[in-house]
Image (cartoon, rainbow, N blue to C red; front, side, top):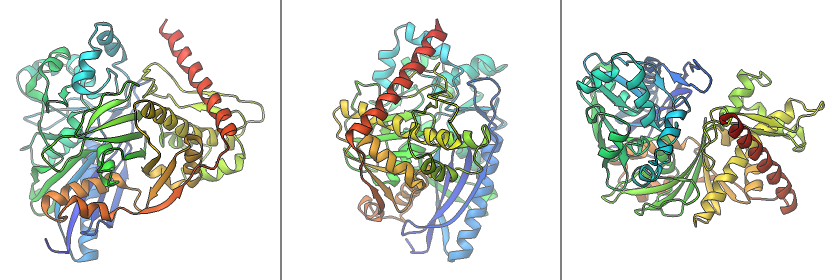
Length: 502
Protein backbone atom coordinates (compact mmCIF):
# COMPACT_ATOMS: atom_id res chain seq x y z
CA UNK A 1 0.00 0.00 0.00
CA UNK A 2 1.23 3.49 -0.84
CA UNK A 3 2.59 5.60 1.98
CA UNK A 4 0.03 8.30 1.08
CA UNK A 5 -2.92 6.01 1.93
CA UNK A 6 -5.36 7.48 4.48
CA UNK A 7 -8.09 5.95 6.65
CA UNK A 8 -11.34 7.75 7.47
CA UNK A 9 -12.72 6.88 10.91
CA UNK A 10 -16.32 7.61 11.87
CA UNK A 11 -16.35 7.93 15.67
CA UNK A 12 -20.05 8.14 16.44
CA UNK A 13 -20.45 8.93 20.14
CA UNK A 14 -23.20 9.62 22.64
CA UNK A 15 -23.14 13.41 22.46
CA UNK A 16 -21.33 14.10 19.20
CA UNK A 17 -20.24 12.63 15.89
CA UNK A 18 -16.60 12.98 14.99
CA UNK A 19 -14.62 12.06 11.91
CA UNK A 20 -10.86 11.60 12.05
CA UNK A 21 -8.47 10.80 9.23
CA UNK A 22 -5.33 8.81 10.00
CA UNK A 23 -2.23 8.31 7.90
CA UNK A 24 -0.08 5.21 7.51
CA UNK A 25 1.93 6.13 10.63
CA UNK A 26 -1.21 6.17 12.78
CA UNK A 27 -1.15 9.97 13.10
CA UNK A 28 -4.23 12.19 12.84
CA UNK A 29 -4.24 14.49 9.83
CA UNK A 30 -7.78 15.91 10.01
CA UNK A 31 -10.67 16.13 12.49
CA UNK A 32 -14.25 17.35 12.28
CA UNK A 33 -16.83 17.13 15.07
CA UNK A 34 -20.48 18.10 15.66
CA UNK A 35 -22.64 17.78 18.76
CA UNK A 36 -26.26 16.79 18.36
CA UNK A 37 -29.39 17.06 20.49
CA UNK A 38 -30.07 14.85 23.50
CA UNK A 39 -33.73 14.12 24.21
CA UNK A 40 -35.04 13.31 27.70
CA UNK A 41 -38.81 12.81 27.26
CA UNK A 42 -39.29 11.30 30.74
CA UNK A 43 -37.10 10.79 33.82
CA UNK A 44 -34.62 8.01 33.04
CA UNK A 45 -35.36 8.10 29.30
CA UNK A 46 -32.62 9.13 26.86
CA UNK A 47 -33.18 9.36 23.11
CA UNK A 48 -31.44 10.49 19.92
CA UNK A 49 -32.90 11.34 16.55
CA UNK A 50 -31.32 8.79 14.14
CA UNK A 51 -31.38 11.42 11.39
CA UNK A 52 -29.21 13.65 13.60
CA UNK A 53 -26.79 10.75 14.03
CA UNK A 54 -26.66 10.13 10.29
CA UNK A 55 -26.40 13.76 9.18
CA UNK A 56 -23.71 14.75 11.68
CA UNK A 57 -21.74 11.61 10.80
CA UNK A 58 -21.95 12.31 7.08
CA UNK A 59 -21.17 16.02 7.42
CA UNK A 60 -18.11 15.51 9.62
CA UNK A 61 -16.85 12.65 7.44
CA UNK A 62 -17.01 14.76 4.31
CA UNK A 63 -15.29 17.73 5.93
CA UNK A 64 -12.49 15.65 7.45
CA UNK A 65 -11.90 13.71 4.23
CA UNK A 66 -11.68 16.85 2.06
CA UNK A 67 -9.35 18.54 4.55
CA UNK A 68 -7.07 15.52 4.89
CA UNK A 69 -6.69 14.88 1.19
CA UNK A 70 -6.05 18.59 0.51
CA UNK A 71 -3.49 18.81 3.33
CA UNK A 72 -1.52 15.65 2.57
CA UNK A 73 -2.09 14.96 -1.11
CA UNK A 74 -3.03 11.42 -0.08
CA UNK A 75 -6.22 9.45 -0.68
CA UNK A 76 -8.65 7.85 1.75
CA UNK A 77 -8.70 4.13 0.90
CA UNK A 78 -11.00 2.71 3.58
CA UNK A 79 -13.41 3.56 6.39
CA UNK A 80 -13.44 2.43 10.01
CA UNK A 81 -16.39 2.86 12.37
CA UNK A 82 -16.40 3.09 16.17
CA UNK A 83 -19.80 3.64 17.73
CA UNK A 84 -21.70 4.16 20.95
CA UNK A 85 -22.75 0.65 21.93
CA UNK A 86 -26.14 -0.71 23.02
CA UNK A 87 -28.07 2.23 21.53
CA UNK A 88 -30.97 0.82 19.50
CA UNK A 89 -32.33 1.92 16.13
CA UNK A 90 -35.12 0.15 14.24
CA UNK A 91 -35.88 1.17 10.66
CA UNK A 92 -38.08 0.18 7.74
CA UNK A 93 -36.17 -1.95 5.24
CA UNK A 94 -38.12 -0.51 2.29
CA UNK A 95 -37.89 3.20 3.10
CA UNK A 96 -34.79 3.27 5.31
CA UNK A 97 -36.66 5.49 7.77
CA UNK A 98 -36.45 4.83 11.54
CA UNK A 99 -39.72 3.89 13.20
CA UNK A 100 -38.86 5.87 16.34
CA UNK A 101 -36.08 7.79 17.97
CA UNK A 102 -33.02 5.80 18.97
CA UNK A 103 -33.13 4.51 22.54
CA UNK A 104 -29.73 5.36 24.02
CA UNK A 105 -27.59 3.02 26.10
CA UNK A 106 -28.17 5.23 29.17
CA UNK A 107 -31.95 4.83 28.94
CA UNK A 108 -33.61 3.01 31.85
CA UNK A 109 -37.21 2.66 30.65
CA UNK A 110 -37.04 -1.14 30.58
CA UNK A 111 -36.11 -1.50 34.26
CA UNK A 112 -39.41 -3.20 35.14
CA UNK A 113 -39.07 -5.55 32.17
CA UNK A 114 -35.61 -6.51 33.41
CA UNK A 115 -36.86 -7.09 36.94
CA UNK A 116 -39.58 -9.38 35.58
CA UNK A 117 -37.01 -11.38 33.62
CA UNK A 118 -34.88 -11.75 36.72
CA UNK A 119 -37.89 -12.78 38.80
CA UNK A 120 -38.64 -15.39 36.16
CA UNK A 121 -35.30 -17.06 36.85
CA UNK A 122 -33.63 -16.22 33.54
CA UNK A 123 -30.54 -14.36 34.73
CA UNK A 124 -28.16 -17.34 34.91
CA UNK A 125 -29.01 -18.48 31.38
CA UNK A 126 -28.66 -14.96 29.99
CA UNK A 127 -25.34 -14.46 31.73
CA UNK A 128 -23.94 -17.81 30.65
CA UNK A 129 -24.73 -17.26 26.98
CA UNK A 130 -24.41 -13.51 26.47
CA UNK A 131 -21.83 -12.73 29.18
CA UNK A 132 -24.11 -9.91 30.34
CA UNK A 133 -26.42 -9.25 33.24
CA UNK A 134 -30.09 -8.47 32.70
CA UNK A 135 -30.13 -4.68 32.76
CA UNK A 136 -31.80 -1.85 30.78
CA UNK A 137 -28.31 -0.84 29.62
CA UNK A 138 -28.22 -3.53 26.95
CA UNK A 139 -29.97 -3.50 23.58
CA UNK A 140 -32.31 -6.47 23.82
CA UNK A 141 -34.96 -5.07 26.13
CA UNK A 142 -34.86 -1.72 24.31
CA UNK A 143 -35.64 -3.54 21.07
CA UNK A 144 -38.47 -5.41 22.78
CA UNK A 145 -39.87 -2.09 24.06
CA UNK A 146 -39.95 -0.63 20.53
CA UNK A 147 -41.69 -3.72 19.17
CA UNK A 148 -44.30 -3.50 21.93
CA UNK A 149 -44.86 0.26 22.01
CA UNK A 150 -44.35 1.70 18.52
CA UNK A 151 -47.54 1.36 16.44
CA UNK A 152 -47.39 -1.49 13.90
CA UNK A 153 -43.76 -2.28 14.78
CA UNK A 154 -44.45 -5.84 15.91
CA UNK A 155 -46.53 -6.76 12.85
CA UNK A 156 -44.01 -5.15 10.47
CA UNK A 157 -41.18 -7.02 12.18
CA UNK A 158 -43.03 -10.32 11.93
CA UNK A 159 -43.52 -9.61 8.22
CA UNK A 160 -39.77 -9.14 7.78
CA UNK A 161 -40.08 -5.43 6.95
CA UNK A 162 -38.05 -3.99 9.84
CA UNK A 163 -34.33 -3.98 10.56
CA UNK A 164 -32.74 -3.63 13.98
CA UNK A 165 -29.25 -2.39 14.55
CA UNK A 166 -26.84 -0.70 16.86
CA UNK A 167 -25.53 2.61 15.50
CA UNK A 168 -22.80 0.99 13.38
CA UNK A 169 -25.39 -1.13 11.58
CA UNK A 170 -27.63 1.86 10.84
CA UNK A 171 -24.70 3.88 9.50
CA UNK A 172 -23.59 1.05 7.21
CA UNK A 173 -27.14 0.62 5.93
CA UNK A 174 -27.19 4.28 4.97
CA UNK A 175 -23.61 4.34 3.63
CA UNK A 176 -24.30 1.32 1.40
CA UNK A 177 -27.47 2.79 -0.06
CA UNK A 178 -29.60 0.23 1.77
CA UNK A 179 -27.63 -2.77 0.53
CA UNK A 180 -25.95 -3.87 3.79
CA UNK A 181 -27.49 -4.99 7.07
CA UNK A 182 -24.41 -5.99 9.04
CA UNK A 183 -22.67 -5.49 12.37
CA UNK A 184 -19.53 -6.77 14.05
CA UNK A 185 -19.24 -9.26 16.87
CA UNK A 186 -18.25 -6.69 19.52
CA UNK A 187 -21.50 -4.79 18.99
CA UNK A 188 -23.52 -8.00 18.73
CA UNK A 189 -22.10 -9.10 22.06
CA UNK A 190 -23.81 -6.14 23.79
CA UNK A 191 -27.37 -6.94 22.77
CA UNK A 192 -28.41 -9.71 25.23
CA UNK A 193 -29.22 -11.71 22.08
CA UNK A 194 -25.80 -13.04 21.03
CA UNK A 195 -24.15 -16.20 22.31
CA UNK A 196 -20.56 -15.03 22.78
CA UNK A 197 -19.23 -18.53 23.42
CA UNK A 198 -20.67 -19.98 20.22
CA UNK A 199 -20.49 -16.83 18.08
CA UNK A 200 -24.11 -16.71 16.91
CA UNK A 201 -27.51 -15.18 17.57
CA UNK A 202 -29.03 -17.38 20.26
CA UNK A 203 -32.48 -18.81 19.57
CA UNK A 204 -33.34 -19.16 23.26
CA UNK A 205 -32.41 -15.52 23.97
CA UNK A 206 -34.42 -14.39 20.95
CA UNK A 207 -37.38 -16.41 22.20
CA UNK A 208 -37.03 -15.00 25.72
CA UNK A 209 -37.18 -11.41 24.47
CA UNK A 210 -39.66 -12.19 21.68
CA UNK A 211 -37.38 -10.88 18.94
CA UNK A 212 -37.91 -12.25 15.40
CA UNK A 213 -34.68 -13.44 13.76
CA UNK A 214 -35.52 -11.52 10.59
CA UNK A 215 -34.76 -8.11 12.15
CA UNK A 216 -31.16 -8.98 13.04
CA UNK A 217 -28.04 -8.08 11.04
CA UNK A 218 -25.37 -10.46 9.79
CA UNK A 219 -22.33 -10.56 12.09
CA UNK A 220 -18.70 -10.25 10.99
CA UNK A 221 -15.37 -10.01 12.81
CA UNK A 222 -14.17 -6.47 13.52
CA UNK A 223 -11.69 -6.39 10.62
CA UNK A 224 -13.63 -7.51 7.56
CA UNK A 225 -15.22 -6.41 4.30
CA UNK A 226 -18.46 -4.97 5.72
CA UNK A 227 -19.87 -2.94 2.84
CA UNK A 228 -19.06 -0.29 0.26
CA UNK A 229 -20.05 3.31 0.80
CA UNK A 230 -21.74 4.35 -2.45
CA UNK A 231 -20.27 7.22 -4.54
CA UNK A 232 -23.16 9.53 -3.59
CA UNK A 233 -21.56 10.23 -0.21
CA UNK A 234 -17.84 10.73 -0.94
CA UNK A 235 -17.57 10.99 -4.71
CA UNK A 236 -16.23 7.46 -5.11
CA UNK A 237 -16.74 4.00 -3.66
CA UNK A 238 -15.04 3.53 -0.30
CA UNK A 239 -15.01 0.17 1.54
CA UNK A 240 -15.89 -0.08 5.22
CA UNK A 241 -13.28 -2.52 6.52
CA UNK A 242 -13.17 -2.03 10.29
CA UNK A 243 -16.01 -1.82 12.83
CA UNK A 244 -16.07 -2.10 16.63
CA UNK A 245 -18.07 -0.89 19.57
CA UNK A 246 -16.35 2.15 21.02
CA UNK A 247 -14.88 0.46 24.10
CA UNK A 248 -13.45 -2.53 22.28
CA UNK A 249 -12.15 -0.13 19.66
CA UNK A 250 -10.45 1.93 22.36
CA UNK A 251 -8.76 -1.18 23.77
CA UNK A 252 -7.49 -2.00 20.29
CA UNK A 253 -6.30 1.56 19.80
CA UNK A 254 -4.48 1.33 23.14
CA UNK A 255 -2.65 -1.76 21.83
CA UNK A 256 -4.06 -3.90 24.66
CA UNK A 257 -3.42 -7.00 22.57
CA UNK A 258 -2.19 -9.37 25.30
CA UNK A 259 -4.00 -11.13 28.16
CA UNK A 260 -3.86 -9.15 31.40
CA UNK A 261 -3.59 -5.72 29.76
CA UNK A 262 -6.19 -3.20 31.00
CA UNK A 263 -7.55 0.03 29.55
CA UNK A 264 -10.10 2.49 30.94
CA UNK A 265 -11.87 5.01 28.73
CA UNK A 266 -13.32 8.23 30.17
CA UNK A 267 -15.88 9.60 27.76
CA UNK A 268 -19.55 10.19 28.55
CA UNK A 269 -19.30 7.06 30.69
CA UNK A 270 -16.30 5.07 31.87
CA UNK A 271 -15.53 1.57 30.64
CA UNK A 272 -12.72 -0.60 31.89
CA UNK A 273 -11.70 -3.62 29.81
CA UNK A 274 -9.24 -6.35 30.80
CA UNK A 275 -7.96 -8.56 27.99
CA UNK A 276 -8.64 -12.28 28.61
CA UNK A 277 -7.20 -13.63 25.36
CA UNK A 278 -9.05 -16.57 23.82
CA UNK A 279 -10.60 -17.68 27.11
CA UNK A 280 -14.09 -16.45 28.00
CA UNK A 281 -13.88 -15.82 31.73
CA UNK A 282 -16.93 -15.41 33.94
CA UNK A 283 -16.72 -12.80 36.69
CA UNK A 284 -17.96 -13.74 40.14
CA UNK A 285 -18.07 -10.05 41.09
CA UNK A 286 -20.70 -8.70 38.69
CA UNK A 287 -18.44 -7.64 35.87
CA UNK A 288 -19.31 -8.54 32.28
CA UNK A 289 -17.83 -11.00 29.83
CA UNK A 290 -17.65 -9.56 26.35
CA UNK A 291 -16.03 -10.04 22.95
CA UNK A 292 -12.85 -8.10 22.18
CA UNK A 293 -11.49 -7.20 18.74
CA UNK A 294 -9.58 -9.95 16.99
CA UNK A 295 -7.39 -10.20 13.95
CA UNK A 296 -6.96 -13.98 13.79
CA UNK A 297 -9.21 -17.01 13.69
CA UNK A 298 -9.62 -17.43 17.46
CA UNK A 299 -12.26 -15.32 19.25
CA UNK A 300 -10.88 -12.83 21.78
CA UNK A 301 -12.60 -11.97 25.05
CA UNK A 302 -12.48 -9.35 27.78
CA UNK A 303 -13.91 -8.70 31.21
CA UNK A 304 -15.56 -5.29 31.43
CA UNK A 305 -16.79 -2.90 34.07
CA UNK A 306 -19.24 -0.21 32.96
CA UNK A 307 -19.82 3.17 34.62
CA UNK A 308 -22.72 5.11 33.15
CA UNK A 309 -21.64 8.63 34.13
CA UNK A 310 -18.05 9.88 33.84
CA UNK A 311 -17.35 12.86 31.58
CA UNK A 312 -21.10 13.49 31.64
CA UNK A 313 -20.64 14.99 35.12
CA UNK A 314 -18.83 17.91 33.52
CA UNK A 315 -21.71 18.37 31.07
CA UNK A 316 -24.07 18.41 34.06
CA UNK A 317 -21.96 21.04 35.83
CA UNK A 318 -21.94 23.10 32.62
CA UNK A 319 -25.48 22.68 31.29
CA UNK A 320 -27.65 22.04 34.36
CA UNK A 321 -25.87 23.75 37.27
CA UNK A 322 -24.12 26.28 34.99
CA UNK A 323 -21.18 26.62 37.37
CA UNK A 324 -18.63 26.13 34.57
CA UNK A 325 -18.50 27.19 30.92
CA UNK A 326 -16.30 24.33 29.74
CA UNK A 327 -15.11 20.97 31.06
CA UNK A 328 -11.53 22.23 31.24
CA UNK A 329 -12.46 24.52 34.14
CA UNK A 330 -13.00 21.56 36.46
CA UNK A 331 -9.26 20.96 36.82
CA UNK A 332 -8.60 24.43 38.24
CA UNK A 333 -11.70 24.29 40.45
CA UNK A 334 -10.62 20.92 41.89
CA UNK A 335 -7.20 22.37 42.70
CA UNK A 336 -8.82 25.41 44.33
CA UNK A 337 -10.98 23.22 46.55
CA UNK A 338 -7.85 22.09 48.34
CA UNK A 339 -9.41 19.05 49.97
CA UNK A 340 -12.40 16.75 49.86
CA UNK A 341 -14.24 18.68 52.64
CA UNK A 342 -16.41 15.61 53.22
CA UNK A 343 -18.44 16.22 50.06
CA UNK A 344 -19.35 13.14 47.98
CA UNK A 345 -21.31 12.99 44.77
CA UNK A 346 -22.88 9.74 43.51
CA UNK A 347 -23.72 10.44 39.84
CA UNK A 348 -26.47 7.87 39.43
CA UNK A 349 -28.44 9.96 36.94
CA UNK A 350 -29.45 6.81 35.04
CA UNK A 351 -28.83 4.20 37.74
CA UNK A 352 -25.57 2.62 38.84
CA UNK A 353 -23.66 0.22 36.62
CA UNK A 354 -21.02 -2.32 37.62
CA UNK A 355 -20.60 -3.77 40.12
CA UNK A 356 -23.90 -2.59 41.68
CA UNK A 357 -26.29 -2.85 38.71
CA UNK A 358 -29.13 -0.88 40.28
CA UNK A 359 -31.33 0.72 37.63
CA UNK A 360 -33.39 2.53 40.27
CA UNK A 361 -30.52 4.36 41.98
CA UNK A 362 -30.54 8.11 41.47
CA UNK A 363 -27.91 10.79 41.85
CA UNK A 364 -27.17 12.23 45.27
CA UNK A 365 -24.73 14.56 46.99
CA UNK A 366 -23.67 14.13 50.59
CA UNK A 367 -21.82 16.24 53.14
CA UNK A 368 -23.05 19.66 52.03
CA UNK A 369 -22.67 22.55 54.45
CA UNK A 370 -23.32 26.29 54.26
CA UNK A 371 -19.70 26.68 53.24
CA UNK A 372 -19.86 24.28 50.29
CA UNK A 373 -19.04 26.12 47.06
CA UNK A 374 -18.77 25.37 43.36
CA UNK A 375 -15.12 24.28 43.69
CA UNK A 376 -16.14 21.62 46.24
CA UNK A 377 -18.93 20.41 43.97
CA UNK A 378 -16.65 20.28 40.92
CA UNK A 379 -14.04 18.34 42.88
CA UNK A 380 -16.66 15.90 44.20
CA UNK A 381 -17.89 15.34 40.64
CA UNK A 382 -14.38 14.48 39.41
CA UNK A 383 -13.65 12.36 42.48
CA UNK A 384 -16.83 10.33 41.86
CA UNK A 385 -15.42 9.01 38.60
CA UNK A 386 -12.22 7.88 40.32
CA UNK A 387 -14.14 6.20 43.14
CA UNK A 388 -16.34 4.35 40.63
CA UNK A 389 -13.20 3.17 38.86
CA UNK A 390 -11.92 1.89 42.20
CA UNK A 391 -15.15 -0.12 42.57
CA UNK A 392 -14.45 -1.74 39.19
CA UNK A 393 -10.82 -2.47 40.04
CA UNK A 394 -11.81 -3.99 43.37
CA UNK A 395 -14.16 -6.37 41.54
CA UNK A 396 -11.54 -7.08 38.87
CA UNK A 397 -8.87 -7.88 41.44
CA UNK A 398 -11.30 -10.17 43.27
CA UNK A 399 -11.73 -12.04 39.98
CA UNK A 400 -8.00 -12.75 39.91
CA UNK A 401 -6.69 -9.88 37.77
CA UNK A 402 -3.72 -7.89 39.00
CA UNK A 403 -4.42 -4.52 37.41
CA UNK A 404 -1.27 -2.78 38.55
CA UNK A 405 -1.19 -0.52 35.49
CA UNK A 406 -3.99 0.97 33.40
CA UNK A 407 -3.87 2.67 30.02
CA UNK A 408 -6.40 5.51 29.95
CA UNK A 409 -8.00 7.47 27.14
CA UNK A 410 -10.98 9.66 26.30
CA UNK A 411 -11.58 13.37 26.62
CA UNK A 412 -11.59 13.41 30.42
CA UNK A 413 -7.96 12.25 30.69
CA UNK A 414 -6.69 15.63 29.51
CA UNK A 415 -7.35 16.59 33.15
CA UNK A 416 -4.08 15.84 34.95
CA UNK A 417 -5.56 16.57 38.40
CA UNK A 418 -8.14 13.86 37.81
CA UNK A 419 -5.56 11.31 36.69
CA UNK A 420 -3.33 11.94 39.69
CA UNK A 421 -6.32 11.55 42.02
CA UNK A 422 -7.27 8.38 40.12
CA UNK A 423 -3.78 6.97 40.66
CA UNK A 424 -3.86 7.96 44.33
CA UNK A 425 -7.28 6.61 45.26
CA UNK A 426 -6.86 3.34 43.32
CA UNK A 427 -3.17 2.87 44.26
CA UNK A 428 -2.58 2.06 40.60
CA UNK A 429 -0.15 3.38 37.99
CA UNK A 430 -2.00 5.29 35.26
CA UNK A 431 -0.56 5.55 31.75
CA UNK A 432 -1.77 8.40 29.53
CA UNK A 433 -0.74 7.84 25.89
CA UNK A 434 0.38 10.50 23.47
CA UNK A 435 -2.84 9.86 21.55
CA UNK A 436 -5.84 10.01 23.90
CA UNK A 437 -8.44 9.52 21.16
CA UNK A 438 -7.92 5.77 21.21
CA UNK A 439 -11.48 4.93 20.18
CA UNK A 440 -11.13 6.42 16.70
CA UNK A 441 -7.58 5.13 16.39
CA UNK A 442 -8.68 1.57 17.14
CA UNK A 443 -11.22 1.65 14.31
CA UNK A 444 -8.53 3.05 12.01
CA UNK A 445 -6.18 0.24 13.03
CA UNK A 446 -8.83 -2.39 12.28
CA UNK A 447 -9.75 -0.85 8.95
CA UNK A 448 -6.10 -0.39 7.98
CA UNK A 449 -5.23 -3.99 8.74
CA UNK A 450 -8.01 -5.20 6.48
CA UNK A 451 -7.27 -2.73 3.67
CA UNK A 452 -3.51 -3.21 3.80
CA UNK A 453 -2.44 0.16 5.18
CA UNK A 454 -0.91 -1.66 8.18
CA UNK A 455 0.89 -4.96 7.72
CA UNK A 456 0.57 -6.51 11.18
CA UNK A 457 -0.47 -6.13 14.81
CA UNK A 458 3.24 -5.92 15.68
CA UNK A 459 3.41 -2.72 13.65
CA UNK A 460 0.44 -1.30 15.54
CA UNK A 461 1.95 -2.17 18.89
CA UNK A 462 5.03 -0.10 18.07
CA UNK A 463 2.87 2.92 17.28
CA UNK A 464 1.55 3.16 20.86
CA UNK A 465 3.52 5.63 23.00
CA UNK A 466 3.13 6.77 26.61
CA UNK A 467 3.00 10.52 27.22
CA UNK A 468 2.68 10.81 31.03
CA UNK A 469 2.75 8.27 33.85
CA UNK A 470 0.83 9.05 37.04
CA UNK A 471 1.98 7.10 40.08
CA UNK A 472 0.18 6.89 43.43
CA UNK A 473 1.54 9.26 46.07
CA UNK A 474 -1.28 9.42 48.64
CA UNK A 475 -0.73 8.02 52.13
CA UNK A 476 -2.71 4.87 52.90
CA UNK A 477 -4.47 6.51 55.87
CA UNK A 478 -5.78 9.38 53.76
CA UNK A 479 -6.89 6.98 51.02
CA UNK A 480 -8.77 4.85 53.55
CA UNK A 481 -10.69 7.85 54.91
CA UNK A 482 -11.70 9.02 51.44
CA UNK A 483 -12.75 5.56 50.25
CA UNK A 484 -14.74 4.87 53.42
CA UNK A 485 -16.69 8.09 52.85
CA UNK A 486 -17.44 7.06 49.28
CA UNK A 487 -18.58 3.59 50.31
CA UNK A 488 -21.00 5.13 52.84
CA UNK A 489 -22.40 7.45 50.17
CA UNK A 490 -23.00 4.59 47.74
CA UNK A 491 -24.53 2.43 50.46
CA UNK A 492 -26.95 5.23 51.32
CA UNK A 493 -27.84 5.72 47.66
CA UNK A 494 -28.55 2.02 47.17
CA UNK A 495 -30.62 1.92 50.37
CA UNK A 496 -32.72 4.81 49.12
CA UNK A 497 -33.28 2.99 45.82
CA UNK A 498 -34.45 -0.06 47.76
CA UNK A 499 -36.89 2.07 49.77
CA UNK A 500 -38.28 3.53 46.54
CA UNK A 501 -38.86 0.03 45.19
CA UNK A 502 -40.77 -0.90 48.31
